[in-house]
Length: 251
Image 1: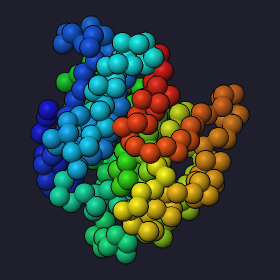
Image 2: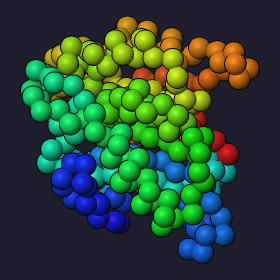
Image 3: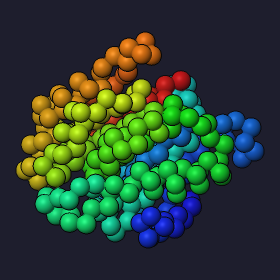
Image 4: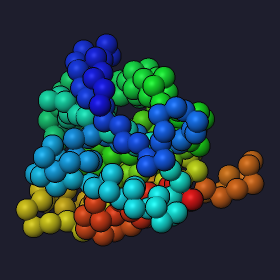
């Protein structure tokens, strides 16, 4: 783990680094990197919200051993007590965020997190070797980062993003956006009885995703290749993670 003192946000957080089984510490091999938001929820139930973690380390270890995914480095970026402000890029009434700081998040990643990882670990450079992902508000800021900083990440993992924030402004911006990365994995659950009514309604129907998914499926005629995306609707972030990782980093 590394402690990041952010000049951009004026706070401190942990960055958790998972290393593949064949990592030797000498830099003899270089790896692609997947950056994930809400780092507390990824690796250990003791730090995860509600004691339920994504089982990221166990899943990556198994899929690499089965030769279903390439060995990679996974970086979990912890949230802070200002999670809502840092993950929401727009002024919002629901949830109520008047001093949104999410527009600073792409700079935080590029100027404070990624340089740290690239300096200390043998990572492959370039868009195709960098991925970004998150769930809920972490999924929202993943989407926003792609809109604000296209060309930085070549793979996106977007889980149950909070589309309702700021009157669905992110969806309007997605409809106008064209520069999507090569691979995008979209996942969402079917809603649970205890979930807020507005959230459950938005996540339970794919109607909210149709314009968004259409943009991701467009053919890149200039490069002569079809961009790939996958949409999955099944309960449980940990349950969907194996499919997402295999899709994004298939061997």
